[in-house]
Amino acid sequence: MTSTSESVHIQLAVAEAEDGARLDRLIADRVAEMSRSSAQQLVKTGEVLVNGEVARPATRVRSGDHVALSLPPVPPPSDLAPEYMPVPIVYEDDDVIVFDKPPGLVTHPAPGHERGTLVNALRALRPDLPLIADDRPGIVHRLDKDTSGLIVVAKNEPARLFLLRQWQRRDVVKRYSALVHGEFSEDEGTIDAPIARDPNNRKRMAIVAGGRRAVTHFRVRQRFPGSTLLDVEIETGRTHQIRVHMLFIGHPVVGDKTYGARPFPVPLSRQFLHASGLRFNLPESGSPIELDLPLPEDLQAVLDELRSGGAS
Image (cartoon, rainbow, N blue to C red):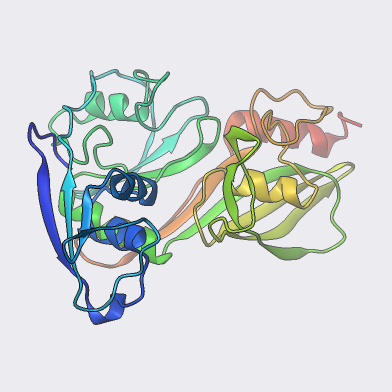
């Protein structure tokens, strides 16, 4: 959504396939760059009408209903000053850049992290790219600040929408490497547990009845005394999903200070979580691409010490 100085008025007709859908989800699905929480807030402030009447977030729409909403003026993008940072590029074509995000780098500007983000680095590395999607130009998905690995950025709006649809349909294969506390008797497993904001701590996520469905698959790659290296694949992409799911089954991610911090014999300054693999379709050709990244030096050093027995 580009910045505007006036409200934007949108009319939506409910299709047969959308009959019975919740109003807030319909808006989030149909309006670009509108999250479900933003849609709920819009409804709560009386900016959404269904068939001419003020609606509630939980309203169920019916085929043929007319939905009218007014979007408030969008402020100009925040300061996106170019800042050169050495962020390796793994793949690039006319539509897509795939970065190897280092740990400690925030994906896009946010309160408390207005500068020094991947977006600022992108502005320096590719200054000719147009600003799309407000202050998240081309960002299709995100990684936590202290999670390293593959992250995809679109170079134009058609490419961003093409990629975003794949993420929304869960057509993308997303693989991670994670070292977790404890030892597993099983070789593989699946965690299917809903995630939402922790009602007791709004800065954390938690397993919450009624939360958004989250599915994580894991397979043991190597066992160590007191810890296990896992290959992880996620079907969904909920905030902090792997970290929350691993804590839920009693195996928090090593080095995770937010979810289940425990002592560990090998020093580590961040969580042992690395986005190691992606498979998705390219915008221009529609052909699949598969990318894999080795562990960064800090995480590899932890494994080397565990394998040498130096941590015993």
